Length: 310
Image (tube, rainbow, N blue to C red):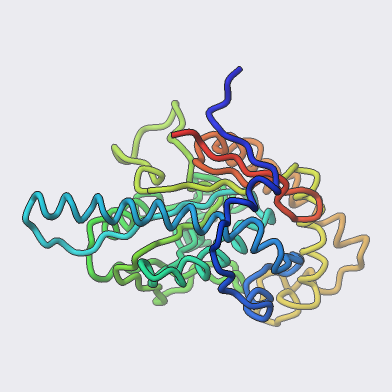
C-alpha cells in the first residue's frame, strides 16, 4: 500500500541541513533537555537543524502568502503567527523537542519571536476533575477545557495583541490560580501537548465546529515504541525522587522515599493504568494526522523521519 509519507533515514535527513549554521551551544542544550534525556549537539545538528530549515521555509512561504493577501485586500490587520503543533506520549521527549525547536527557530532572521505554550495550562483544575470523577484520567481528552483552548488559539490566530493562557505547575500538579502566560503576537507559536492532534470522537457532540489542529500550520508527532517510553518513564520517575518529589510542596512528595523496587512498581502501575492507556486509546491513533513524524530509538535518538507528501 502506498504511504502518504516520504521516509528518511538519519543520513538522508542529515544531508537536508545543507549549510544551515548551528546556533545552539552545549550549555544551552543542557538547559533545554529533559531530566533523563542525553541529547547531544550532534543530534541537534543531524535532526533538529534540518527540521528548523524545513520549518523556516514553511514560515517564509506562509508570510509571503499572508502579505500577498493583505496587499490584495488592502487591509492592515494584526500579525498572525505560524502555529506548530507537537504531539506525543508522556515521557517521549516532546517537551525537549519543542524547546530545542523554539531556540533554533528564534535565530532565523525572518521570525525571531517564537513562543511556546503547553496544553497543561488548559487542563481542568483538580477540583473540577475530582468533581467529575476523572482525576485518574488526567491527560485524557476529557480532562481538558477544550472550549477555552480553542478560544485561545482562535484569538492568537486572529492577531489579537495579547492573549493569555493559564499556567500549570507540575510541582503542585494543578493550575496556578491568578497566573498567566501572555502571548503577544509572536512570529511562531509552538503548541505542545499529548492530544493536540485529537479529532472529535464520533459518539461525542461537537463543542465547536473547529478542532485544535485546525489552527496548526504544521504538526509534528514524536514517536517511540511503548516499551521504550515505559522504560524512560520509570527512569524519570526514579530520578524525580531526588529532585521534584523531594520538595515539601510537591504533590508527589509521598514517592520521594520509595526504594528502587518500589518506585519501579509504582511507576509501572501508573503507566499501565493511566499514561499507557491514554497512549494506546487516544494519542497513538493521532500519529497519522501529523505532517512530520520523528521516530526515536531506545537510546532517545531519532532513527528516521517521515514527512507527509504535499
